[in-house]
Image (cartoon, rainbow, N blue to C red):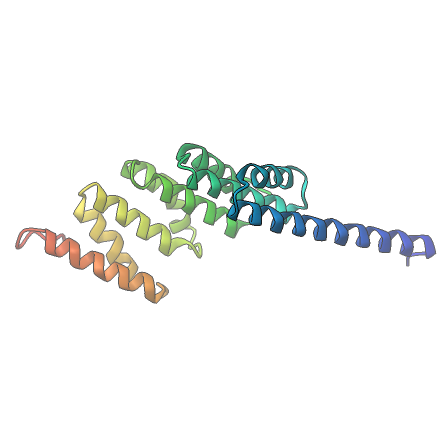
Length: 191
């Protein structure tokens, strides 16, 4: 059992942690306001500071925000690098690692070959991640972009065959399959 000084120390520690979280929350909100306004440099400075020294949750959120700002600014390579770092950081929650993986893959969709996309996304699909549906959709889109209709059809058909596929993704998979079948010469649809 804690003595009087132990209780005081615990109470003081809890108070300090709560203050740190409140200050970080205020700083994060202020950075987002700057980012939406005209002071991008100030937003970047505040987010960078939080990413380095803020409480764990705000460090991760700030890193995501910084990566998104890089993407928005057209700095795709830097954004992909930032998302890749989040995706492989053991201190980042697994769900957020998956989100970072998807964000990086989405940014690479227009330029990556299928092998790269498969390498990036296979772990989400194979691990039965909550992100598996989006990962499979990106793989299908990659194959479609590269004119590999057989692989695109396979990916979108897998989405339709998975009873867990969310309705909006199911609808998009159906539309993509209709495009694929419509684009192929008569009798050339993949089996």
